[in-house]
Image 1 (cartoon, rainbow, N blue to C red):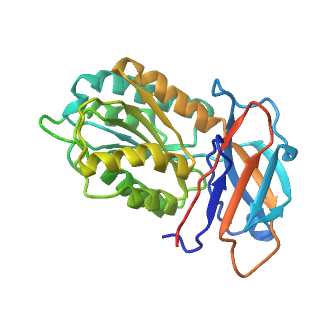
Image 2 (image 1 turned 180 degrees about the vertical axis):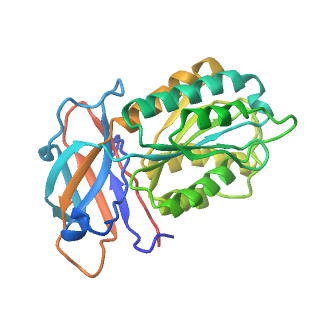
Length: 301
């Protein structure tokens, strides 16, 4: 759990991605402790951000008290993103498309944010780190080339989310995210539950984004239901989104969509009176017609 828990709630139908920014020695945030910065995503029905977003388009409340929104600008802080890939037997025919999607994702991120770091995990059988956090296309490509479906294996998706989030939390990212591809046609074997996945993502101050290939196996096991709750609920509550697909041919396009959403975030700075006790609840609302906003709803008590 994070040392200073806080919650967020978001209006119905609104999307966002936000992270708590920690001051570093000598930074502007340390010199003025009253200013806080979050990162949000705003987009229309085509997934595109608005040409202009101003403080007047947003309202921020902490514990029900309105805060003054000081600045809104495109986010430029480098990201740290853990990418998780289902390499269970269900993904046997998807590996070539996964490799293409992962390379496209990295290329898009580094084209506009070359200092962002990516890590690659596989979770056919137990989660394994295939490429540690890097800005190197060569190191990334080597990790991608090591991806193969494990014959006779099942998914450890929730386990991978927890492990990757715990590792990310130790890095204290200013903008953290977990992006996962999961094939719902195979069984889930994790002993973890969706609440544990949410707590781990929240502790990393990250958002969870999933690309899920919908399955039709009819499996109603506890593990499969928990996986569905991570995909459908934890993504939303953490400030991410789920993108669905039915065929491997759509994987590359979905990874591209996620990269575009992450790259289109805005940095929002608002004022807060100095206090010894941090707020428990943060609520962000958008007042821009035709656009949606998403923000995490942490419950770290």
